[in-house]
Image 1 (cartoon, rainbow, N blue to C red):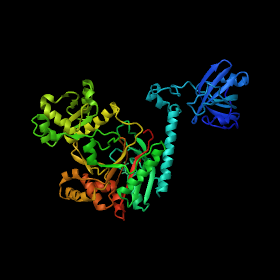
Image 2 (cartoon, helix red, strand yellow; image 1 turned 45 degrees about the horizontal axis):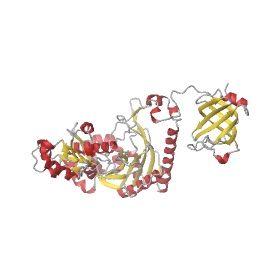
Image 3 (tube, rainbow, N blue to C red; image 1 turned 30 degrees about the vertical axis):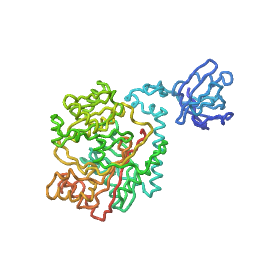
Image 4 (cartoon, rainbow, N blue to C red; image 1 turned 180 degrees about the vertical axis):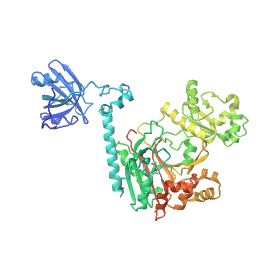
Length: 555
Ligand code: ASP
């Protein structure tokens, strides 16, 4: 028989009691995390979102409660009234905040029973976790786990801090519509059929991009939103069909203003987890990031930059390198400090890894007492040593080398750099290395359908000095120039993760038209899809720009 809650109220949470509370009569409510019977004494660990309190039922002093407590099982919901006492010396648990005290129960109400959960809520180690399928099926039980409770509460604090900060900075929180006409960001839209107009559909926003730009045209000046976005993309570990981002737009804004705003925001938010960021953040242009790190989201917690080895190979007759360099490709390497001890097996694994990113092979040089290298036979000792020198390697190090098209060299060495750092434990813990990557290319060419796509989105402005190139490309048919155009687009990268991305937008109707044309949209198609926006651009659109930052808390 279950009890009624009646008018009983909690006096404390299960994480609240401390030694100062000894002597108080308290009422706690929560879930039974664990029950242990020792004859005349029964112990129950009572859990709620704040923590765990040990409750003791004593047969001698509270026989009825003791008898009832014997029947409770894991995840039963109970209310307990009793007195706070100090735990006996030797039984204190200093690992938990409530570990000095316990509640000596006088009364217990069993408010609900529970079936045996499909997995243990109290997790003893990471490997004890149930499979993801089971965890998701019983998500409400998974979320009872203290770690997930803590994640959700941290997320709440992050969002609250964002709202405080944006308010202080003069931004207005504005909700934009969810049932909309498509706002393309490069993914597919989710669509919702209309009941009232059969055969017609709404799209769900991939982001509020056009709406926030319309807000600028409306003179709202500084907009933000904690925005839910929907993108029908292939799933990846860091990609969900729906996610939340802090979405920002500001009028008359320069990139510098956006950088300052976001640096201040990140600094405040990271403080919530005890991390101090250094402002201003470092900056790298896209070209430099690709050249030095092989990635547009470089992890700057460690060095291991890509080294160009072409100068050491001048005049080489070794066909794979010679033809690569002649045809405009690259030969580059990374230096693994202390890597001379890397085994053949590890080098083979790293080669397999590099191949996944398109590398034909991974060559290596190891500098121990003697120089050994996969290239020794082909190039001879002298050239191999020249390459090691050019890479800046010293005795005890290894150099890992890839030759090929610039794109392939960057992708494979960039990925290898992260992989080697992870394997060799070269990444310092509790360090955050934020940076801005700037001047992204405006367009990227897709080989499969032979046309250019917007790298950020089609509303991003080119650099002022590159605008003439856009005109020539579109008006004089010199399409290949599109590949050279740089955009006023920027990403915030933290520890190799793209944490935010945005741009200064096009605010002139004529330039927006050129970009649509560059993307292969006929005027007719452009009008059909974005007519409302093209019209809006003609009514006094201020220069504007913004950014969006994904909101998640498992950094
Ligand atoms: N709309 C972009 C995105 O969701 C962000 C931006 O350009 O502000 O990624």
